[in-house]
Length: 320
Image (cartoon, rainbow, N blue to C red; front, side, top):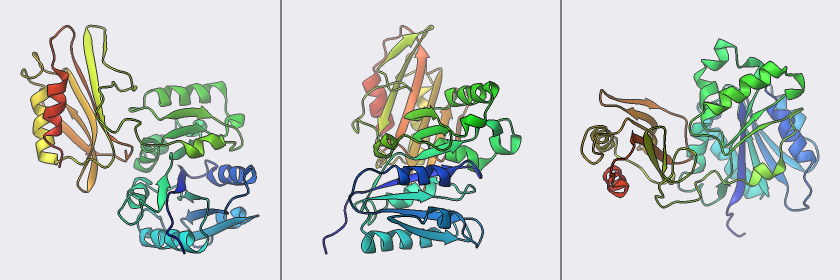
């Protein structure tokens, strides 16, 4: 039997009751090709699986992992189940539907580990949001919800048929504040997702270090400030201590004549992804669910003769 390579895997995540199972069912029903069967790994917090039963229709291989969160207590079960599906079913595509209480970032880490990354091709993570719940403190302040939004390559306002104009405006304002922006921000009714999203690549188009700003554009000037950003692929790791000193140095006069007004970045370090903001007063660090790439944006006073290549080289001194 030939080895398995590059099976597309899509994570469909979102808070409890947002409509993940309905969305996957629609994608399965709308499938047009006659290739290998598709497979779904579904996790529910309780011991009695309901979503798996709803998905078990037609030419679909469904595996349930009940009684926990597949990103933590049942993580080993997830990997074992995925390996078994790949070997026995040899699917043309796999969906992973974590429970609404799951932090999906660790699932992405598992899919990219040695031994898995050649067998699967991680596609854009789809996160569904119910706009009607964005004004609920227990949702907006939930670490789980924010991690689900952070990893979104495609962020979808679902159940728009039930939303008011105020609900949709709240979602649009919420989505506009996300940094970095998802690849796609969209609105959907009844879980109707665009099948084209299943083949979006979450990785940056440029794996070499091309200067871009936070929106993927090249060097930008305006409003009495210049900005520049750099992106590294998800395989690049940074030493945490050396990175701390490099970013701290960039907010002081030196490589940037007057120092940066702001340095804001997301970085992969051994064992953790970090969100880092540096100012002349401090370098603030916190864990993040972001998994798409490492990136940084710098804003400096306009009109300075800045050697941005030297800035990039200084940050890359922290690459392991």
